[in-house]
Image: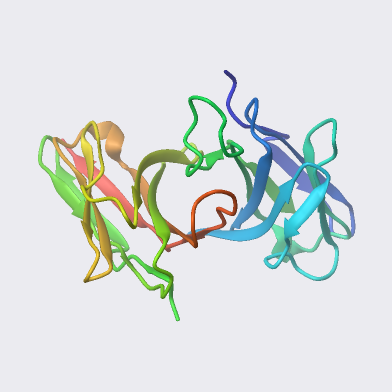
Length: 119
Length: 117
């Protein structure tokens, strides 16, 4: 069973460009979370999604950031018109729905992260 | 106010010794969960151990154990028989509210552990 997959692993953008970060949750997982980690800091929650629904985006900046988790395909975190302050590691995590056999619903499993560098 | 506090920015331990990484938390919700994750220099986040607020016994996973002291609101991670590969950042995290759906995690600032040979 493949783990959470994120791509790209590293992304370099110039100021003003768009960044698209992709996350494929573990098989059978229907909950996706995005976190941001600034250098030498802990992870900060950004957004929580279920298929086709944003459940909680209280950690997302109000402008330039958006997230989606379509019925088919990976979850996407999109950052428009990037600025240097957006440089960070962006982690995606997934957790299973209630009742999924053999799973621990409590635990979020993290992807390897995408390191975004804005020049 | 800080929800999760890790007061040790850095720790070091001799190989094969045990080490305790501190974590205190703040919540008024009676139902919550506590997690520890390891982040090696390669950057990924590795789940280590979980403790639910209603669990009667301290969680253990191999060489990892969680010293859960509910009245003191502490959830320290104990690593026994340290290995060189244990050198990494360690994050304590908390989920507030009942299990069963919404698992937003709040992370501490982390503790960097160095294991010396």
